[in-house]
Length: 313
Image 1 (cartoon, rainbow, N blue to C red):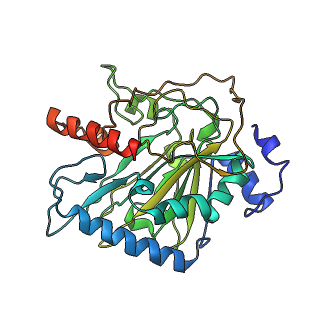
Image 2: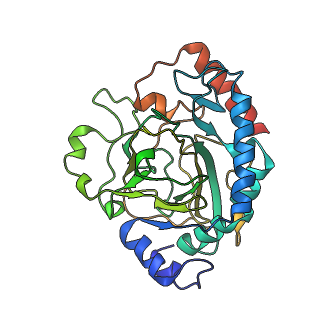
């Protein structure tokens, strides 16, 4: 569904100015839209997941660990597919205000794709290099968007999400290197053509929400503060967007309709779509790829096995 068709439908949450801003700039920031009662429940659950990670030694299909992670001082980069780890995460993704926000921007029929919780740990939480999302999970159109929920207050020193305004209207860059290896980030050569000096960093109090389109160039700096920056991310699309390749973070909830109704016809955007890698055998950590870490064969086998178990429920 094209933006002008989306705007034929009355919004549930956003103002017309906020909708216009999103379609023009490829992102929007909404302060304090998630009730603190909900945020506190998500915090408690997330703390429990961090405690669970203490017994994990190497990254797997659930926990993506920083190299310095250990039982005494856990340091997570990501909790993959939180909706598959506890019902509260799925309740939030499917029943809360964020699904209504998605409907305001993709149309009344909304499909869930995947979720993740990026931690950006205190005192060195790793950067996320500039990239676009759609190359990781190609769809028939460019409606997919990611909604991030800040569980704590986020300021400039914590590595907030950064976006390049208007970049969703520009080219889709290759995220393969010169050896045709997937890296998950835009090459330095291509970044020379991007107006990085226009970057906007999205900060706000706990309960604030960031939204960025799947084509928007975005990333974040390291967190050098003494406070972490957990960002709960949920990805949605219009119901008429269908995937070309396997979901990198597949769960039983992938493809679930969270607002409106399912549709039988795909909307195919005429603009070329960059194909995703084949994630059918498991998903290698974005952080490991961008930081050029080596995953051993045993580790990849374990990720593939856990990936299958997650999908099967």
